[in-house]
Length: 441
Image (cartoon, rainbow, N blue to C red; front, side):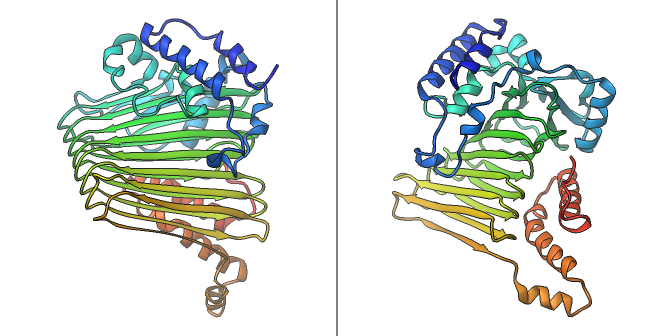
């Protein structure tokens, strides 16, 4: 079997209970994936990320490859990986598990449910959005995800509604049995003059081999505010491919916080389209890698309308033989006058064997704009280490304090307290309590 045949065989196992338009979309996406194949390092956007090892693994769909976990084990894992929030949707190997989920404190009219349920009972509400923000024509993994859409999350906030508490979407991977692949699809719709916070967590247990290929589509209505947190803490043998796209209307505010701490290979494509005048977009990201981990972030902010602003700050900490990639693009189209954009990427290398390839980019086709970008790569400041040591702090503690401070800067900007507290604890454990040990979820 070649690298695509495994997925063709998996496709034949899918059920036909979805609406006709959805089945047509899946078939078209599969055909396109067959034409595109997997990306290679010959392609500019994949020059530094080699997915060839992933293509050789005979992944199976979870239901056909892995035995069910005992409920007690799953509940323990949810408690370890979950957050102190009222609304939490739990997915195990890509499928929604109602008995592990909690839908408390949802405001009237707000929907937070499995995508499979939404497609069955209210497909007309999903159809105008699904596949509109993330296309499959040019992106292999997005095409593969679309071909295998079965379940995921659907969050819909009606007009003039403020959701006070965060909505947590927790995707657990059990890594049990044969190598499995899950294709979760997340659809978030925030109507005009509304406000919400959505947390998307991907957590794996154990060192088994598995793959998560996730796609998140986000629509932010006029004068609305959405904060989206994506926390990646997959297992040590995992492959994590993810696409996040946001479509913004006039005067909308979108904040993205992406944190990548786990998996053997991680690739995150995150983007926003400012498609209404006066929109604001903020992309913050933190990636931590060690051993032989590889982490890749590609971002794109598309200024299509006038008087929009964007701010982007990504920071990376790499140790051991790990490798990292940051490729950030800001497009300012001819009609997007008065655009204001800033992009920064900062990297801290803790080992002489760690490598980062960074490429911030601006493409500006308007003449009345304010745009800047930059990148830095460095090591720990030995003067700062000496300063701390001169005040009685040991060499190891001094280094760990400086690393923690560098990474924690972005976490301190997070407004969602449950996420901030959890990540602060994980960072402290990673860089202070036992810096040489793997941090469990």
